[in-house]
Image (cartoon, rainbow, N blue to C red; front, side):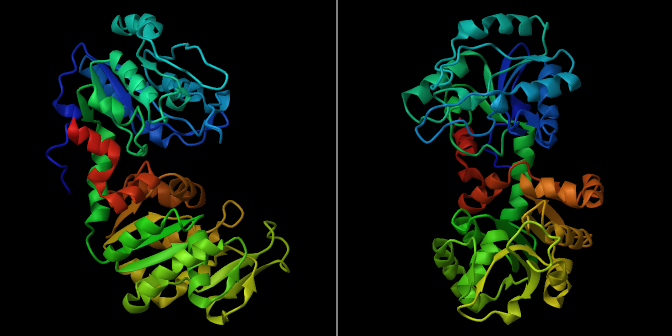
Length: 428
């Protein structure tokens, strides 16, 4: 197993007895006020129990959703509150978490975090009358994303609450006040989940070959950097979603509805690169549709890549047809890989789930490979579409599920210790 950079400060090495521990977690799992998947919350139990067992007092914080509008105003609502997270934790953790009641401005969110506003709860925490404090959504604070004096002020306010800062939020890779700036104000360390994610990330960055990557996405421009880096490492690459559509449009000179011309232009670089190396394996059958209603066979059909002709126009390609994975080249690449990285939903789910379900099932047949799945939609669809595969994977050490797919892709481009919140811990 890979090792951590020895410069990285670890929670294991900090004395916690009698100390307030401010921990940044990634519990961004709330949608319209409800928890859509508890995986990221459950993954931080180790940290919560460890702090309490070592005599410390935990304060947790996370972002939830997007709260700023185009004008920069902060919109706070029950949909992005931490209420559902705290309710969930309080059913699982003895003692319970409490959320401080802070004044909220109509458009500026929470403008400051005075120690006096949290002091009553801190007193209860230190008397063990409550199990922990959970701060409001960090994106409700004016300084969280502002990158100015407000950010520095929020970092100092956060630091005033605690003795130690722990970052256990691998998926929250953007450098904000709660993930980056506060690390320069308090003694700081990586939590257990952060350590685990970095160790497994090294298996992607330094894979055991043959290495197969499966990557999909809704826009090509957000994946171009990681794709180019991945291309250098992989033996084979399978694309899905809109980025596969953009690749096909660039390679075969076709037009596909829903694919922006700028994405096609960007994809031409990968097409050119692959003319020599030939690493990209093309699923050869696509589901074309002008509707989400699959009951109308006149509007939903399978088209073959082999039949493409320059200048042809197609409706939306909404999935990879499952029979694509019967092709010997794809079956061989999946079956012979020693490392498989998956950050992909192949089709537009839930309406077109078949391509994703098939490739997840085919990957599961490779018993020897390390199978590393990106977080977010990939993990959700793995659970929903192939629950048997997911349940088996939970007890299978060849599988690993990252809590942040975007963080993995960013790290592929920048390096694990190039992620700014991780770099901040190294400086600390």
